[in-house]
Image 1 (cartoon, rainbow, N blue to C red):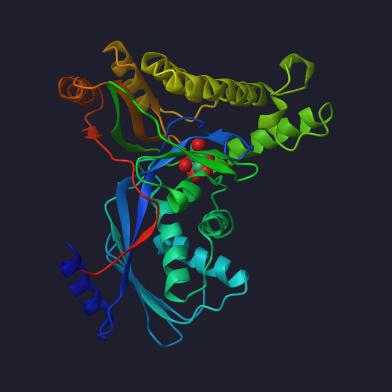
Image 2 (image 1 turned 90 degrees about the vertical axis):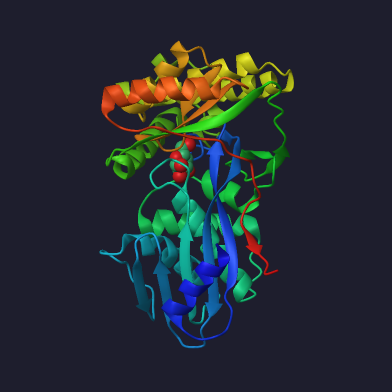
Length: 384
Ligand code: GLA
């Protein structure tokens, strides 16, 4: 793999100096969905799908970037938003955020490729942002801490790309460790590594292979709805920094002038907070059945209250539930993408056949099943 990538790198950029190679993973999230922009707790892990970046200073004041996925080349001297090469904005946004920190980035050559399914809710964009931040920091010796690289990646996406995402994806991709999830407080950015022993159960993913286009606009709208609900709650709870922590109180939602939509959104967030506490207890008690049922409850809440699911992922989850899997839910931003399944080891093969067929009969789309390993966060791959 590396030999052919290296060959391609030299073909695109010429020269003889070897690039450095960096790998940036994808992520899953066990629980805490759509709470990372209201100060909530999340439980994500990095997984082995990767973005590979080959990077080398080029000693000319020019950024030269090539994406294998889009077979597209970009060469520019200063950062400018790309209307026709949207893929590049995830990279350029990070350059800009690094520059805002006072670092000057001389020219470089960068080849980007990878195997993270696009639009699958596994965060290929955060993987790219973190890969860019980390590789540039390493190549130019900026020594930016991993946690800060995550923040710069999020800022790039918020300010340059225009999705008002939370911090979860960039954070786990920056700090992830093999076989460990992190429990991250998205208000304080404090986190602990935690090993989930699934006992006689396993996690896997099913890609619905649909992505509905309203994703970015609907995502930003959800965030605005949460902010307006928070403003209303603030009148009674002025000392609370975020929506999530307000739910430490017993709240009668009817006491507040919420719109119907805000009412549903706050119900999801307060429910997700309880589910997160409960699933952590279920994992430490080794009660995987209970953990699974909590995941399915999260799906119902994301679908009915937060309204970020779609018919295809609902159909997959319902089919899985009727086959008595321990639990299943959509993950990530929503409107398509992957479903995370928790089930007893040994049932997957049989289920794969049945569910794929059912899904194909309904939608004419092939669902894909992925096993995954929990992997390290962004890292450099050393030459032999
Ligand atoms: C996307 C965003 C994250 C998070 C999830 C939903 O993946 O990038 O910040 O909000 O959706 O939990």
